[in-house]
Structures are given as C-alpha cells and as structure tokens.
Image (cartoon, rainbow, N blue to C red; front, top):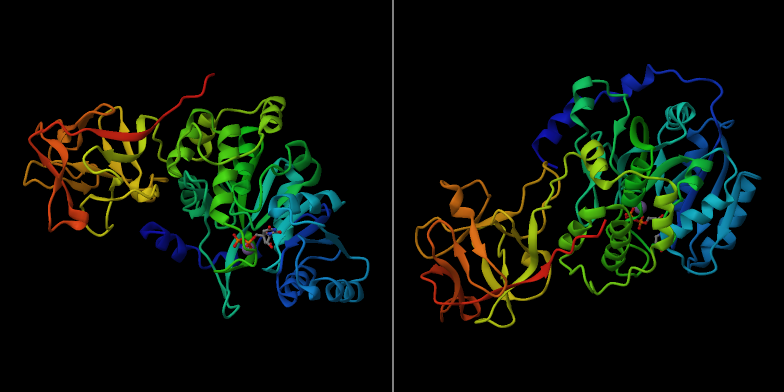
Length: 481
Ligand code: UDP
Ligand code: MN
C-alpha cells in the first residue's frame, strides 16, 4: 500500500495497550472453530489447533472441527486422528471429504458439523493471539448479523516470524481479488484503535459468524469451485441483505502467507469463474466491471460459471439491496467506470494479430504488441471520449488507468495520468467501431506506421488521417431491469 498507509501503521503501533483496557461480559456465546485443509503439513495444523486451545477461554471453545478436503498425504489421516483424540479428547471432530470439494464447500461441510451458536472459519495455518475471541463474541452477542473478521497479521512462511500488520479494511479490485485497504476516514478520525473497522469484504482466511444467521443468508455459494471470490461475494451479500462486516483490531490472528499452494489447480481460472458468479448475482449494472477487469466479453466470456438461479432466488427471497447502494454506503473508495462504451483488445486493420498495449509501465508510451488478451491490452473507450489503456483501476488509493494523449508535439502519442494535460481536449478522441481514432484536440488520427527500426516493425503514431480503421473488441451489455 502507499503513503497514507505508512502513517496509519505508525499511529497504531500501540493498539495492544488500548485493547488491554477493554473488558468483556462474562456470559458470552460459545464458538466452534473450523479449520479446513488440504495437504497441509501436520505440524502446521497442530500448531493452529494448539494455538486456538491455548488462547481461547476453555468455557468458550465448544469444539474444533478439522475438515480434510481430501488430502493425499497419509500423515494427515491416522496420525492426525490419533494425536488430537489423545491430546484433546472429545474436543476435536474430523470431517473427511471423499473428494476434493474446494475451500468453499469444505467450509460448508465444517459449518454442517458445528453445534455452537457462533462459528469461526480459519485456514489451518494460523496462530491466535491472546484475547482474540472475547471481543468477537461480545460484538456477536450484541448483533448476530455482524460477520466479524479478526485483524490479520502475517506469519512469514520461511521463518514463522509473526509480522504485525497495520489495521486495515479488506477491499478488492474489480477482478474481485481481495486486498487490504485503508480503514474508512470516520474510523481514522475517531482515533480509537479498538473500534471495529467497517469493511466491504474479507480476505477470507479467517471470519466468524452466527451459525444460524449464516445459514439464513445462504452460507457461501456452493456453486463456487476450488478457491477465490467467495470472500468478496459474502461481503456484498451480507451488506446488501441487511447485515454487516467488520474487522476487530483487538482480535488478532496471524496467517501464513505462502508463495506456493499445495493443490495444483489454476487458481486464476477459478477466481475468474467464481467472480463471474458473484457479478451475475449481486452486481446489477456494475457487473460489466468484472468482465472488463478480466478483459473478457460479456457475451460468451469463454468461462462456464454454472447455474446461478438458486443464488438469484436467494437474493430475491432475502429482499436484498442494490449493488449501487452497497458501493455508496460501504465501498465509496471504489472507482466506477459506468461510462464505458467499448472495452478490450484494440486492433488495427493494418496490423493483424497486433493489439494496442500499455507497454512498459515505466515509460509513457503505448505500443503495438502481439494480442494476448491480458490486462495490459485492456482498452476502454468512454462516453466522454477518453481512451484508457491498461488494467482497470480499483480504489482511489491506487492510481487510475492511464489515458492516451495527443499533446500536439511530435508524432508519438503518450500514455499518461488522465489529468496530465494542458487542455482537456488533448485526452479526448472520437471513435466509432471500425472507424478512425481521431484526436479532438489536433484532428490527427491514431495510426500504425510500418518502420524497420520499431519493435515488430510497427510504430504507433498520430498523423494526418489516412483512413486506417480500428476495432475495440467488446461492447457493454447492460442488464435488463
Ligand atoms: N483449501 C481447501 N480445498 C481446496 C483449496 C484450498 O480446503 O481445494 C483450503 C486450504 O487448505 C486453506 C484455505 O482453503 O486452508 C485457503 O487456501 P490457501 O491458504 O491456499 O489460500 P491463501 O490463504 O493463500 O489465499
Ligand atoms: Mn491461507
């Protein structure tokens, strides 16, 4: 994260002292703790189990549920059973999936086995800090429609050293990948390091719910596969359907951020597929943003996201609010691109197989490059006439996508921050599908020039229009209301 994040970190170093001053009621609800795992080291699972036993008051910890998502390794079968039953008789239930279900349904299986009024879901590579449970159960007791996230710290995967993270909310980009974001301004202004932080979604490795409420609002989407998207979908759903989600800075859990996953799936593909499910069910007219972010067409996206009819019926049954309401009230930091007309790869009839590309991020030059459909070749043409090139922007904490600019000097168009122009018209272009791209400032056209000394023999120029034609791949399809 960028600069303001640093100042947040400094201010929060002493949150521990603040938390110690809080007191909690005696009669708190009990919790079932669910760990899911696949091919995790036995020692790491046991570390998670010991840590939750050691740092949760015994009368509050009803049970621990270990969900084995069909691991391959033998030590996770007999050895694990034997160890936990001997060490913690009666406390630990083990659920074994007979086939690999993915993390979403693995958590649902854990929920099915849980009996306490509150259920916490965790990756099986975590450590719990002292006093993690009491603040959560207190907030839960006050209002069971809260989904509560411990603040996450990092366990370095190579040394197991715990690295404290600054307090953050959990946001995401339009591809529905999660990321830490700066807490809402109201929270920062309050200056209370113990106060809950409103969050639009969750990172996902650790969250606590009321068992019955979680069932009522539809658990996690069981149509999601393997990994990803479920954490964002739950954030959208709980807020849109009348509940809330918050991070509690005094409840801290550390999680190993690993660089390699012990399951061999193409995580990106499943994250994309699951993101499309969330988009189709919850995001109304904003769902186009997810297709844009992944640079795929809205018609025939080339991804089978399965049947979402039951999730749409759930949304109707729960009478949930619109995505627009959610953006305005819960995720106002998100940049919105509703003025997009066309997006995707941009091709010129003179250079078949080549696409407009943002090129190196360090310079301000757009280039032509063999088409590959990734986000460096995502263009967006808007109703105002902006032509933006590169990954779709997300929150206002991060830079927006750059604009193609004809500043009238020389023949090379530049790619710059959209407001880095002396006249607004320098960033505006006229374009209709299969027609020229014309600068509104100079009247020159964006064209391709054959040149021996340019990469691939192709140079992008602005020049007197010679009739070259461009195509931008995808149109926005607006959902019917
Ligand atoms: N997981 C699972 N089944 C799968 C994939 C993942 O049960 O098919 C579990 C995994 O063991 C872990 C959790 O889901 O407890 C989240 O996965 P991971 O830790 O790899 O994701 P990260 O925290 O790195 O985002
Ligand atoms: Mn994890």
